[in-house]
Image (cartoon, rainbow, N blue to C red; front, side, top):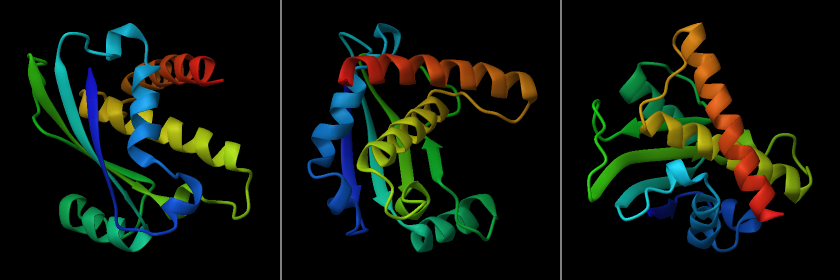
Amino acid sequence: MININVFSNEKAWTKKIKRKNFFFNKICRAFPKKYKFLNKKVSLTLMLSNSKYIKRLNKDFRNKNKPTDILSFPFSEKLKITKKTYIGDIIINYDFIDKPKFQKIEIFREKLIRIFIHGFLHLLGFNHIKDKDYKKMLKEENRIYQSVISKLN
């Protein structure tokens, strides 16, 4: 079972996602069985933020002085899921998800679900440095996304 602690330092998130913990935990319950970690306690922290904050983190931790859509910080390089495992932190940038302004709430949420899945896979050790890794990660991302969308609709 996955437990997510959701925090926010950007008020605009509240306009789009009312019950943040419920929203993200519901997404995780819709994951394929492989990623539900049944009979285990897997946890992560999710920060819902903005361009200003994520730019600072990107500069401090990745030496890139620009905002990005998402940052993922795996807790360890060699992930081993045990009975109780903390897998890391994800920070999502509201300003990237909310483009274009005034998009339908459904589109906003679909983008948010997709980017959350992307960050989640990074915590599990997926990356997209090499082309073959990108293809593998994208395939897995799409598989999880289809599972979530089919169960939420």
